[in-house]
Amino acid sequence: MRRPVSPAKRKAWRDGRLAEGTRLIPEETALALTYNGGTYAVMMGTPRDLPDFAIGFSLNEGIIQSPDDIETLDIVELDDGIELRMWLSSEKAALLSERRRHIAGPTGCGICGI
Image (tube, rainbow, N blue to C red; front, top):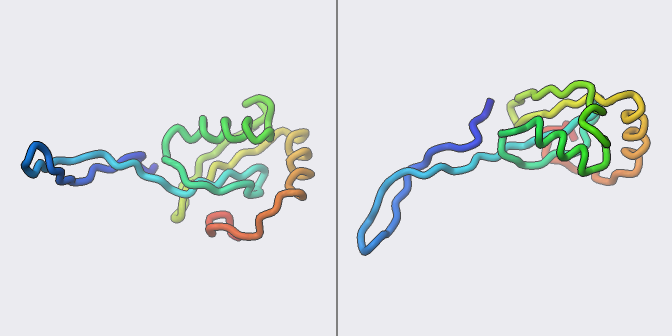
């Protein structure tokens, strides 16, 4: 799994002199959220707490009403990012399929295959 932060050397001017050290830089990667095999969204995010991110996103978007609506959640690391693969209950999958017909967006970053 990708690291959420990476150390980096730094130089800073402090109290009239050069100070050297390291600092932690947050890492981001492409996160694809897929439901029942179809990509819904791709966004940049820190590769940490991914199950919480997937569930929170799904609740916020109204795709699910409860975490129990997600039957399985797999985190798949790819060359270009991370895919959060969710399989929904059949009732939620049918509602999402109908909703997808109204989503516009003919472009993408490539991780979802568009």
